[in-house]
Length: 120
Image (tube, rainbow, N blue to C red; front, side, top):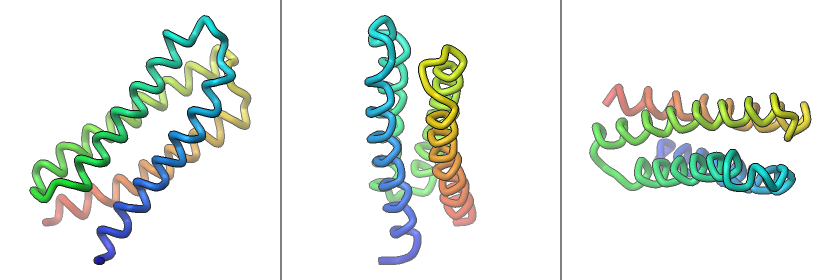
């Protein structure tokens, strides 16, 4: 297994950890947000997972770049949802920081992955 495949698996694992963390956090949101912000967060989260899986599974560099760029947009959208959650006081400062740090780490890895694909 080459180093590129290993790093793809690392980003996948980190994203799965993010999903787990997110699901634990959104359970604490008010019931009024279950079909609003929580639904948006979960939808964004799982569409991101689908994009990561497509990027891992595809062999064409152009397709891979397309999925990775879409995943980058999905992460940006997730950041907005988290910012709103914090603004409305659905999450604590610690939750906000943990969540943001996790996404930033994934974004940094994604940037490296995009750069490695762009060089091919």
